[in-house]
Image 1 (tube, rainbow, N blue to C red):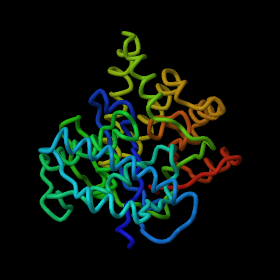
Image 2: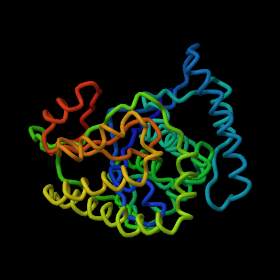
Image 3: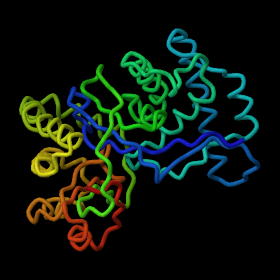
Image 4: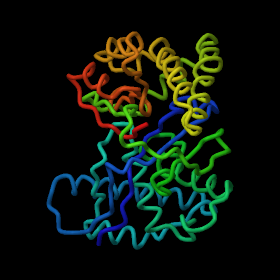
Length: 312
């Protein structure tokens, strides 16, 4: 048995902001992927994944009992497959902000949910919101609280535009220009990040009136503008807004940026060689970068590994 592949995702814009109803834009990232597998793998990784699936199945069982009208699973088949050694075979790094648990949630829903909403039907906003709600409840096992967007992105394998918490739609983004010098890239921080403590920290900061003002008047304003610019291909305006956004994050989200990257972050803003922003909740994992000249960015970041994910 080898199930269909589910891909990682990148939230290009909207981290933290979408908690407070900013716009967001999430795209599938096919470089990393995962699938449910059942074979006689004796690897430690497979055993660890199998054990985690057992715990996840218990969570789904509870969800089943508490909200039977939301979603029902074929738990007997799921438990039998887990007993048989099923595991999630994934290349998606965990704690890197690109949706490792989201891909797993999508795979389990796809295989074991009764009356599932399929990607082949007409996906109305209502259906997308139902899926998002189901996925949020499923993924809460991994993060404590989940928006459900990561699994939704992985399940649909389409870019998703978040207009607000209860207004989401699949969207199209401009085609890549493979020869383009402009690029979105991932920068490996070399450490993993934990989502829950970072979100908790953000919620604590939101209790301060000054921080709330910054979020509303600067962070959300620039995030929304970036989403609009990216979807409409307004590159010049996009980079102006990304620079502002990078600045706001450096000034007000320092704890979410690994210390070793504070200088690098500022250097990008000062030289305009690249602009960095959080990828997911931060604290480690990947950092997202935007540049109008990838060669210049690579030179400036020569001590780091860059993975280009999109070319302008």
